[in-house]
Structure formats: C-alpha cells, structure tokens
Amino acid sequence: METILEDLLDVAIQLGASDARVIASSDIQVEDDLAAFCNGDPPCEQYAKAPSCPPHVSGPSGFRIWQKESTHAIVVKIDIPSSIMFSEQQREVMQLLHEIVAISELRAKEKGFTHARGFAGGSCKNIWCLSHVTCNVLSNAGKCRNPDKARPSMSGFGINVKKLMQSAGWNSEKAVKNPHPDADPMSWVAGLILL
Ligand code: SF4
Image (cartoon, rainbow, N blue to C red):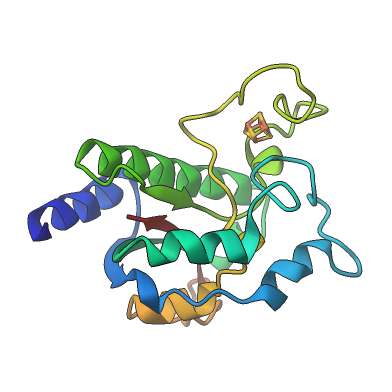
C-alpha cells in the first residue's frame, strides 16, 4: 500500500503538481455552510451550469458517505505567483489542476483504488467549455467533452480547502511572501483525490 501511495504522489508531481501529500480521509473537513455559498446571495456565476457543480452534485452529505468508505486521500497543490493567479492565465493553471487530479484518479483506479474520485476547483464549464454556450451533458446533446480532464469542484461538496492545505502540512495563506526579493507574492490552487 505504501509503495502504491508513493507512486501516486510521483504521478501527481510528474504531471506538474508543486507538491502532493497523503492524508487520512477522516481529516477532510466538510461543511454544509461552505457548499451553501454556491447558491448564496448572490449565487456563484457558474451555479447549475455543469453536472459537476451544485445542484447537480451530491454535496456534503454525498461526500461524507464516500469519505466513510475511504481511508486515505491525496492532496495536490500548484504554487503560482499571485500575478498569474489573478490574470487571464488562471484558466490554464486550473486546467492543469483538473488534469493532475483526473489522471491521478485514473492511475489510482488502475492500481486498485477502484472507487477513487478526483476533485479540483472552479466550474468545468468555465474552465473547459468556455467557448460553448452550454454543457453538452446538461443540454442533453451528448457526453462530456472532457471526461478524462474535467473533475468536480471541491466547493460544491463543502470541502474546507484551507483546512485541507493545513492537513497536508502546507501554508494555507493565499499570499505567501516570495523568498526572492522583488518577486510576486505566491498563491496556490489545490485538488484532492479520495482513494
Ligand atoms: S461538457 Fe464541459 S461543462 Fe459539461 S461536464 Fe463536460 S467539461 Fe463540464
């Protein structure tokens, strides 16, 4: 088991993660209030636009069921300068995050974690299908255009991402001082593979 987990961490790093760590699934904190923000006042602009976002996902209650059936999870992060995080390049970073999580999930399944589930950040409609008017699945036009890349957002399941970062042993502050003088403060995006 330990070797398989180490292999999966290597997969995430090779795909482009800045770091990846194994945590106990029981350490993932899920909060109903966080999931409620998706349809808050105002609601998220991406609310209901993809099957991977509320109200089309099972939310915190569904996640808690999967969590009880799982013992380990992998947390991944990508460190990026804040200037990129808050620029048009953000979409490329989010695409990379989705790919790391999706491919890691598929590798975990190949290695025996048949119920592995990957979670990323942001709406796949915004990240992968921005140029399309509607989601192919929700418009009943066919299958997902990106089944091997797009994964649901942690937000819709109420996953506390800051606490997730802390469980992995990482700094959860969004603007971490860059050790290089005159360089941008650093930020991060994170994803999760429930094994
Ligand atoms: S078709 Fe696009 S918006 Fe719909 S689930 Fe797939 S990636 Fe998401």
